[in-house]
Length: 327
Ligand code: GLU
Image (cartoon, rainbow, N blue to C red):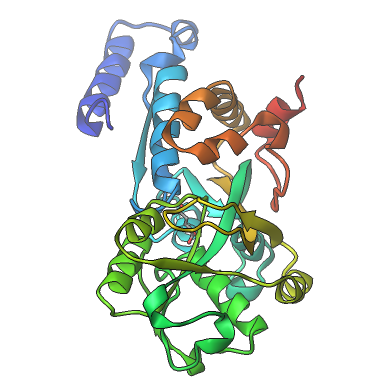
């Protein structure tokens, strides 16, 4: 995705500066230098290739490259939300996809971030609901989460938000990690492991339909387990970022009935190093080009300026906030 190599850009910028100094040009001239002569790298952390962050991230990088002068945006695959917060906190990426629950825990130093508060991240945009999808194969005979003691469970990649969701949801069913055989797998790995009979159940927190689940549903008789209303109420009471959601019939092959479950929100987070001007431009580029996002995934329909602050769980970048307040 990179347009120019960093070395080439460095040489160009250094060359321009040297020419400026050598010719005795005063600072007045430099002030008028078009900003577009400087490359601004925006590295975006997504998730695994079989999730939803990845295709949306690649559409967003393309939008930024086409619509903001001087920006060179690229994406990287990661373990998702928790890994992404760490990448942001240490300044290794500039923008990251994260779940709103995980971002809240990080900024407030609660749950998995107890005693590990992350102070340098801001919100850029709230995006779309990420559905907690609990998948098994018909042949396992598993009909409810209450049946899974002793089973092999893919709880998400290490460093994923999915893993935190799996733990919280199992807790509502009275199941701890000590009661199951936990496996830390990406969505794609979990889907293959289900197919090969190496796991019995997998958790996926992602916008639906999710590529990894489509893959397994196309190959095997896949079953989505519901989170019943009574359990959803218990989960939401303890962890208020969850909301109820229904996976419509025929979202996946041979899945005819509706499946009630819960969801959190996907959002974009940035470091507090991103200034208001860039935050404004990035938000404006994204929300004036949502047609490009819709083209890569149907969940893109949920990404709108009107809902860009709904469910936002951490303070916004000032420039993005300004953009959302404009009519
Ligand atoms: N929400 C997931 C997580 O943080 C990743 C979803 C995706 O890759 O689309 O674990």
